[in-house]
Amino acid sequence: MVLPASIPSPNDAWQVFNLGQWFRDLGWTSFGLDINLRASTGFIILGLIIALAVTSRRLTTRGAEPGIVVDVAIWAIPLGIVFGRLVHVALHPDVYFSAGSRAWSWAFVWEGGVSIWGVLLGGLIGVAIGSRLAGLRTSTFLDLAVPGILIGTIGERIGDWFEHDYFGTPTSAPWGVQIPSDDPSFPVGLPDSTIFQPNFLYEIVWALVGLALITAIAKKFELQWGKVFGLYLVWYGLGRSWFESLRIDPSLYLAGLRVNIWIGWGVAIIGLIVLMVASRRHTGTEPSVYVAGREYIPTAEVHSEDTYSDTDEDAMSSAGNDATVDTTDTESVKATRSVTSGAGTK
Image (cartoon, rainbow, N blue to C red; front, side, top):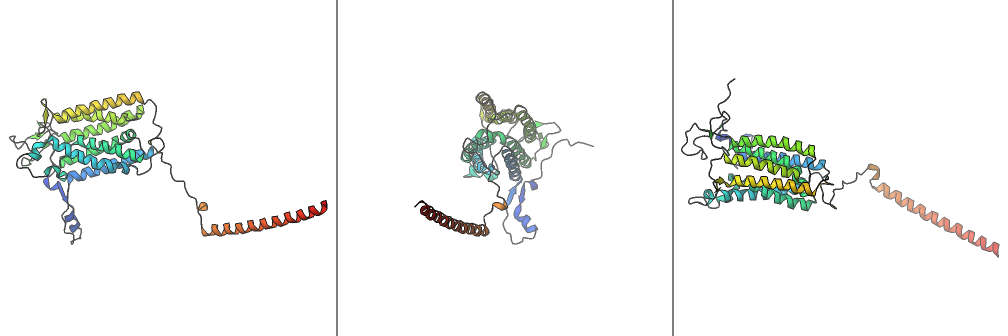
């Protein structure tokens, strides 16, 4: 068996899936719209769905109301997209604001280009808002969401592979990725046969290892109160800063380093601070995933014999009539006794 000398990139035909043509091929010939779904978008959506399902399951196991993850996601996802796009544009100003760039192209998020740092920031704000409205502890939600976040990252990086994106410096390693020389992202001046560091693959492996390692550490030491999320920030921040050091695409630089490298180090430091502060302030276990006074109380189960019906109404009416008769009889007896008693005394 001969192993390949490099990792091939998916063909351009796999980058976009025409849903409209698919409907027509199935026999819906009257469907005239061409709805193009990019492979990268599809993998992001798939990763997001799995992430929400995993987080929902973990919340329910801790006693949260089933489906409450949606109440938080409706805030976290839109804000994550908006902040992710804004940070990406801020880090690549020449692409969107240079001479010849299309007007308003910075807002075309469907064309690709979202910063993971912006997604984390916007998602964090959204989680804080959604958790507060739902009565959940924000730190608890973030802890339970860490596996889902890592799974979502894997989906995004698979999408980058389809887009011929997120690769690094040239390499001769057998795991180098091929980038078509006619692709806009192919660096100018390099031989067509050049292969590159597969940053997307490195981050997928880093996310898988982090998923196993963080889950094991959290279980062994019973990490709560935001400590799991702090550990995630340290892990991802350090890994991402390394991946960024391998990139050669245009970006902003600060003191000779890509801004994303500085951000990665900053995120790791923030994670350490979260771990230290949470360890000092909270030594016990969390009483609930909910804040005090907002606990979820499951609806009591209704049994068939407890169900109210017309028969029950008739029975109650009959019982009321009997009670009236009994009361009348009782009053008659009392009156008779009273007369008899009076006569005897006199």
